[in-house]
Image: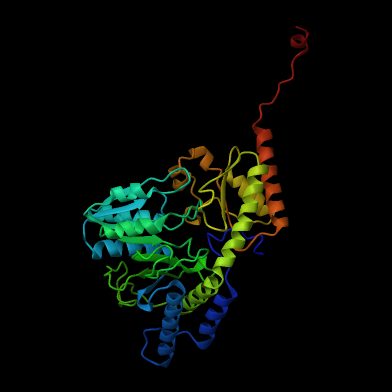
Length: 403
């Protein structure tokens, strides 16, 4: 499938050729355990450490601040549970209502098992958090604040830099889930003014497959001076924070994808924004019942999400899939669930309307003819649903007509 037909990059971006080549090189050289004390093991360890340096350089981190995991979910869990348990300033955690389930469930785990208190800050109708409202929840016993840099379902990018700075002034650790943002925005972990999401974040989550790397690999960037309580125990790999044999080929592919993505990311973001805006404009103008979800301007460059009143999201997905376009109705982690999206409900969207959600996430700019075809399919489905919903006019009997 071409990039103009695969429009679900927020679930998984297409595999980059650089990542494929890096993984093939590892496999062709012969698989070995990076902890083994022999030549093959040393070469595997060298591959892992070179990848660590590549990712650190691309994200403005130090190599020792990169901890490899099995993906974004594990990295979020390690950040929430690991930081909260190892840095017991208090037993209060703050997050938002639209975080990825791995963040919310990890916080609820701490609440349920360890007696932490959890504050979940609401968002407005565009999915934007109010920084003042967040700061107002921070207390002397608040250990951790976790806010995603951007939401994967509605694309809203949060005003994190100033908020994080204020939180850390109050002594609160700050974690951001940058899984969705880092592959399309120039994100940096650098301790320097002007970096994004800011110089005041303590931990940041990444996932390989959002960059076009392999699935099943991710990383937590965390300040080297901060202790972490492991959530996976064993041989003490990854500075003792994440035990388990490293996925050497996957890590190599991850690093290659990150390096290739970061190179020219600003130009790519601009191109995606232009294509996204053209798609949004056409859908809102030509598809009956279509409404944009998320913030109109502060959103991920290639992200366009909608509700379409009166049309089931499933029928829209099937129609687009039949036409050759792969899209989604929201987070792939919640696919197959019959309940409406908690993210859309948090935005105040009616549950029935939330069931009509549709999400386009572009891996590359869309050609004009693809936009034309997508709009035509959606318009056809919306018009068909409208005709079926219209009350049928019953024919009048001759007697009634004569009266």
